[in-house]
Structure formats: structure tokens, C-alpha cells
Length: 403
Image (cartoon, rainbow, N blue to C red; front, side, top):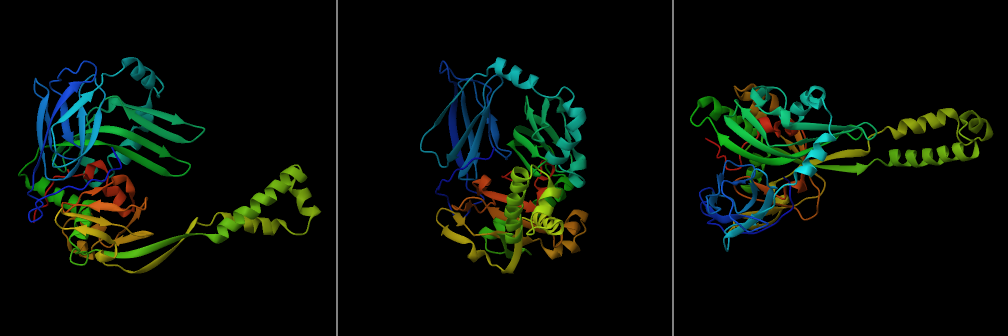
């Protein structure tokens, strides 16, 4: 799940990919403080997980300094902890028992035949389409429940249990705890978020190795790593600044039309013909022109010159192995043209395609040498890369690309 957090942690900078930090803790019942055995504990979007023993104790190791820890157990509410490594003390994590009555009320408010009506849409937008998505399958789709608000034109979905997904393209079994799935058809805004745990089912197989490398080359994590290493040019990226400004013509047209419409409704009781014959300022042709101006794009885009990584680096802490990036407007990222020379059709299609990155808040983004970044909610991705950011192409954060 997306969360806002910003912690700084010391690491052995000379070997950032090899550094390991220990996470030790105890899972207890929030009501009676008794230990809970068999609870699942994992680092979100990784293959790093374990379970608590009969005393409720667990130990995990992570190469990253800032992690999102997910704790779940049947019959208990999920806990999410954003923690800084190394820890100064052992964690004691209390989880609460679920209320079955509330769950039953929530589920009964959803569509009876939701999967039949919306299942394909759900798969396309969560898993993806084509290529690796064709080898990615949801094994327990019956846990997905849908609600469609006709008035608002909004589709939402929940899962009564975590999704079990088998990816036979990348060689992972994915447990995905869906936190949110929402499609606003009116604004065309789509959002999904959740917690992912990867189980590797294909170590050593050449097919998985090749496909994982393809996913990595198309991933935002590779771009982040390239930024950290200050090697956009070496990695084949062309990055330009994209400025988007409000369309003044559209704004002015909307203001004029609203004033005209208000006059028609109040003074002429909604009679447009009476409005046209009663005044000389606005003819029917002129009003139609204003209406066309209102349909213009909300923003006007201006593409600026080629940028270098140093232009977006706001701060750098080599001792801690962390870097802060910040910038105004958008990054216009052109994918490596050399992808066209690849034998892989997915990479061939991606050659010279464009994606955009926008920072929502003014505080910027913290990036790490492995390619991770946070807060994830602060960075909005659009364009070509969106299709390859879905679950069929997702790699665990602890994935190490092969040469």
C-alpha cells in the first residue's frame, strides 16, 4: 500500500547491494497480549518474508534501509509498518481480531455477478494485457467483489482474501493483498494499490531469467537506479523537461459560457432563441465558437531541452547511500533507442517510446542505489511505461538484474 514516509538510515555504502539489515520482532494479540504463532510477515513488493514461531517471534533480513512491513494472520486485521533500518530495538507488533459482522455487511453491498460483468476489465487493468500478461493468471478470482456507482460512473473492487496470482512468464507466485481498485470513468482516472509478496518458482530457468531482465529494463526501478548512478546517457535514456500550463483560451471560454448560460436561465428562462434575438453581443455562431474553445485541452505542453541527472538531484548523502531528487513540471523520458536492436519483441516495441514523471508534493523523492524510491505516492507515472507497471511485469524489490 502506498504510504508517505521519509527516513534516513546508515548503510555500508561501498557495497550497497550486499548490505543486509536484520528485522527482529514479536507478533502479539492486541487484546490479551498473547503471542501469535504462524503470522505472515513480509516486506512489501519483495520476496522477503517469514512467519512467527510459537512464541510469536520472527527474523527477517533486508538490503534496503526503508521498508514497508506487512503483518497478517487469518482472523486478524492487517498491520502495515513503515520502518527505518537498522532497528534500535526489537519490534513488538500487536494485531487486532477482525469483526466478521462488518465484513459481511461490506460484501453484501457488492454486485452478485460482478466477476462476469467486470472480471475482464479487472484483469486488464490490474494484471495487464498481452505479452507476459497472457501467462499470468488469478487463481482465486471468486474473492473479488465489485461495486458500480451508476450516478458517479465509478467502479470499485475489494478482495475478501489476498489474490493468488501465478506468473508463468516471470516465474513467480504472487500473493497480492488489494488495498484499493477504483476506476472513475467520468475523469478517466484509475488507481490500484496493494501489498505484494513474491515466491520464486523458477530459479535457474533461462526463460524466467530472460523475461525478468526484459521487465527490469522497462521498469521505473531501472530509471531510478540510472538516476542514482547519474548515467542516463550510458543507459540509453533521453530525458527532457516538459512544461504544462493552463490553457488560457479554454479557461476564458468556460468563464464566458457560464456567464451566458446563467443569463439564459435566469433572464430568458432557458430560451436560447429569445436570448439571441434580445441582445447583440453573442450570436449563435459566437456561442458555438465559445463551446468549441471549451473542448480544447486543459493544459498546453512545451517540451524543453535535454536534461542531465544533476539537474534534478537536490541532495546527496554518499555515507548513507541516499539521494534526494526534486524538480518542477514533468520529466519527459524517452526510452533507449537501442531497444530496437533487441531480439525481444517487447523491447523492440518500447524503443524510443515516451513516459512522463510528475512529483505531486514539493518535498521530492528519496532514491536508493538498488532502484527503490519513496514516498511512492509522490511520483505519478503516465505514458508508455504504465502498461509495464502492472502486476504481470512486476519484479520484487530485492531482484538483482543479471548482466
